[in-house]
Image (cartoon, rainbow, N blue to C red; front, side, top):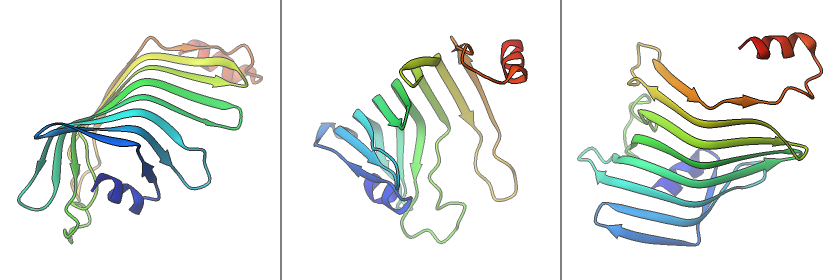
Length: 169
């Protein structure tokens, strides 16, 4: 269902194997995400923990962990040691409510994130964590987050105002 849902979003997911870890957990190995007009994102493994099919046909997953993400485009490469989403809900295929047909997760985290431009590391982050509020039809989605270990190399930034702004942050 995860692969099928993502194909509707314009993403193609391929994997070399699937490993059933126990009754409610499994791991996709050798994963590639292909987006239209972009190079594939490679991921060593995607692990699904606490998978449960609900009575309404939706699927709840306690956590989805992406191990070793790598993607690049032109002169830019981004790597992340690990990323995870918490409390992932994959909607039922038959739910007519447009709000309830959106995939949802309550949190996103990542670690050891690096951005390289033209062979030079320009940014890194030790960790990020973002929490999302519930999706409702009548309220904006609330979110909060934290970043740690952020490093920016602005030596090649040409705009003096931008350099000053980033330096002040």
